[in-house]
Length: 231
Image (cartoon, rainbow, N blue to C red; front, side, top):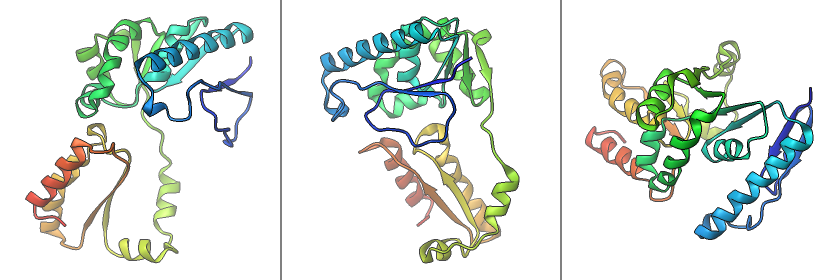
């Protein structure tokens, strides 16, 4: 048995690991966001070819990937007895919010049923794949995100050293950390907060995360916060 980890990037990884790290240096990697359709297609072909070679060279038994682009490359490259892919979001709502992701829809519908297993973090994500992308329920397996309650509770009792954080968390805080996407459910917290404030006006809502430039959802969240009188 041999563990291989493939990273299609120019940056090295300093994460602790066992096995062997293999870096795939992709062409036109300086500014991928500015690449045109031809260059994007070439990069896809290049990654599929290189990953296929790696699978063949090391006789990979099970290939696991995370995220839509990695999943597509994993499936197109073939070469392993089992292919396990992971979908970490509600793809239908993600594509509504980020229209450029729509180009992946055809790939997902044509390829995902070829996977040995499709891992999702919730039952809703599985229903979304079946209803919008025709992924067979038999292919889908739910594995919930892992948490460490004891470690979280211990960290919650620590006093922040940063003055800004100390002031921020001097009152009860409803905290959301993650990308600004429909799947993360930030809009639900906005609707909940007025009800919480009726019982205890000391509470704050803190949302920490990144959003796409000009993100539609972020504008909607800000607009809804103003409508609810939150600031």
